[in-house]
Amino acid sequence: MNYDEMMKKVSGKEILSRRDALKMMALSPVAASVLASAGAPAALDASASNAKGRVVIVGGGAGALMVLARLRRALSRPDITIIAPNEKHIYQPGQIFVAAGEYAPEDIIFDNTGYIGDDTTWIKDEVSSFDPDKNKLTTKAGKVVEYDYLVVATGAQYHYEHIQGLTVDMIGKNGISSVYLNDLAAGTAEGGTITRNWFLELKEAAKTSTPRVLCTQPSTPLKCGGVPQKILYLSDDFLRLDELTASFTFATAGEKLFSIPEIDEAIQKVQQGYGNITNKFGHDLIAIDPEKKVATFLHKYEEQGKYDEEFKEYEMIDKEEHVMIEYDFIHISPPTTAVDAVVNSPLAWQKGTAKGWLEVDRITLQHRRYKNVYGIGDVCGIPIAKTGGSARHQAPVVVQNLIAVMEGKVPKGEYDGYTVCPLKTSYGEIIMAEFNYDGLAPSFSLDPAKPRWIWWAFDLYLLKPMYRYLMLNGLM
Ligand SMILES: Cc1cc2nc3c(=O)[nH]c(=O)nc-3n(C[C@H](O)[C@H](O)[C@H](O)COP(=O)(O)OP(=O)(O)OC[C@H]3O[C@@H](n4cnc5c(N)ncnc54)[C@H](O)[C@@H]3O)c2cc1C
Image 1 (spheres, rainbow, N blue to C red):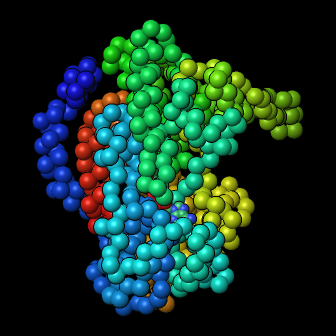
Image 2: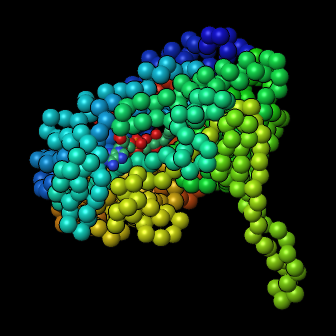
Image 3: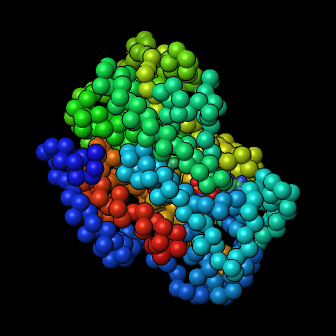
């Protein structure tokens, strides 16, 4: 089905014609520059600082490249080393559009080399251990690198192996999918293609039966925590476009659909519109039997106990049980931690809910104990969603504060916790959930809880070129 046919099928919706979409694409540099000035903190002036010192950036993803570009511009004599294994850069948000059939797999893979200039030393390796007390680190190949200032941008690490019975090579077989799957070091992103095939197999099955579809969300933080629901709604709508259906279960370790009440309420309405989705809250996937197609969850819940005369309320007792759910198709979102080198280092939070993630101050992004260390992106142990949108707003703060420290000044840049989840509620519509530490933070004066075609068009046609040409070059 081509674009226009698909859009025509979405009856009764305000939709974008191909002509309008193309117009928007042509306008994208203009729109991008307008958007660049909306909401994102400004870049530092070119070569504004004569600060000196050896800066090492660890990682080669969104956060690392944004900081690198801004630092190269802001320092008159940059002395920067980047330690990153990947010559290819994955536009990870695009994995969803590959699954949806809107992008080809190659559309989301860029060359990393263009972002790392000749004035930067590039060590194509991974860090195996950090020694922040001695201002040095060691790479997997055994190279010891000393620094004066360190920026940690190593992202997050999947743990499919934490689900008993599951190995990565099972994903893509027997009705199992995971759009998240990628190997950033190798520059590959199979999750999109595997989930595309999963959509197609699901549609074939729905022609002769009512398949049972299970979408899961773990108890750990996730890259873009809206992804499990994006797959839920897109796969449901993918069937609906051909007047087919299935029975969908969303099993999440969480207790609600979205952390922001206004968005949570809007999603409940979206689900009512589908009419074939059952939510299982407090359900954490712990095991899978791929042959029998049974998933086992640890279900945590509270049970009402005795009435407490003293406090005039019922005692609530924590309970847990194992719940088994049969499925025909399962989409798994993996348990996630920081990468091993961070988890096992003194740089990580040593206790608390962020244990294992980088211990940075949530406003300044400076390490709370090692003041010459900064963090950006998914690795940060701060109470906000892990998205590229967060990294975009963190980059100018990290650079401003790092340069302040290099100049012997007090870091004054503040990150307000901005993040964004473009929640695809159907083909052609997105709820653009922008929020920060204080709650909703929309960039535009539109009701943020409403699914809109304009956000679909923006995400599908504008965001990728903006990411590739502006954000990664530190221009927005
Ligand atoms: C399916 C999917 C959909 C998403 N959708 C959205 C969305 O719609 N909107 C949005 O804003 N965000 C979205 N995200 C999240 C977004 O991609 C990430 O938040 C963003 O890439 C984080 O940037 P980062 O630099 O922290 O980590 P990454 O971009 O993941 O980069 C980490 C880098 O560190 C390197 N690395 C890892 N370990 C080491 C080591 N030991 N030594 C050296 N280098 C190392 C890796 O090779 C990689 O280059 C999505 C992600 C996925 C997977």
